[in-house]
Image (tube, rainbow, N blue to C red; front, side):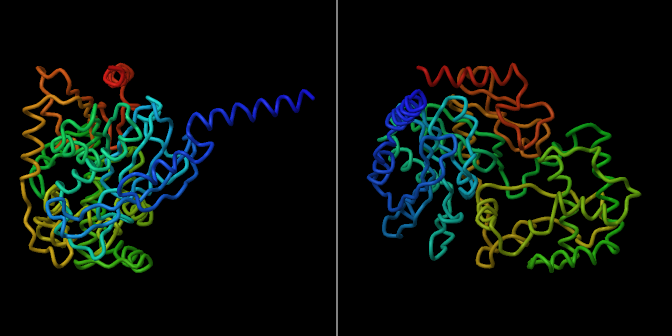
Length: 433
């Protein structure tokens, strides 16, 4: 009898919670499916959420020309409650991360918030068919976000925070510049704001990351990889053949670029200098360390990052490589304009970089004081072209948080205690107003 009562009350509690979340009769899916533009909904394992759906919406290809056609854009909706805040994830890439059952953004954890995770146009399921690169612009992506936010605000009327990581962080900032009144707060993580296709600010920054001893260790390892190039090329060639890699440059040059990329990748991901193989280590050890950190797949002719490189080459910018310390060993004579030569589709090989986006976002952040928390890693190469310089002492709403020695993995939760508490308290204050 007691066992039956326990089971009854357990069921009652679960049923009451489900009903409160709008799950008892499929209310969440019905509300989403009824939204303007929604053409598909698919239920996903919810994990920590009350409900979770993969949603496709019909969007204009060109927000300035309705006659250009439409495409379908993927959004992943993670439901906590109708009365909870909502985090709009301005993802710069595909949305596959959000499909994982255990995925949850830290802001959603901090504030028990819903998540609207937006896949960027021209990535994965949000790729128009046919692919016309003319419509892959920052302005169009900002309008995508604006339409999605306005659509979902009809069912989630509480406070909203826009947030993204890396390219997604840049997307958060450009979204704020185009639609400054859309959100109650913006949290861009490790977001670059490059002013050139190969931004020169990376060089001076890379010359001061870590300690002099650590920088010397990284460069010495790269030098040894160049010295052993003839011995390591057979393994490199075999690996590329095994993976079916196709490149726009000769394989010997791709090897050089992998070695140059090693330093960027090493500091970007905050790797441990102590784990760099000794210069006397075997060829196998050196080769494994290279391709684990900076493998050849990154430089393939046609890969999952093609849309990113198109944006980088035309509006977002990227980093240069420093060939000078290794010139006597390298096959390549110059790395200038490598982005165009390695990554761009043939039809865009003559595309030019426009500073229009940089100027618009930098001008907005410099002249205004939006409720924005910027988070950067102290040793992350992407901090070099970051927008932290726009956060000046006289601004009351903009805040800059830099993790000492931090990498591209820096988040609010990785900040020192006092900084983490300050960031969370600031956001909480905005949400409670």
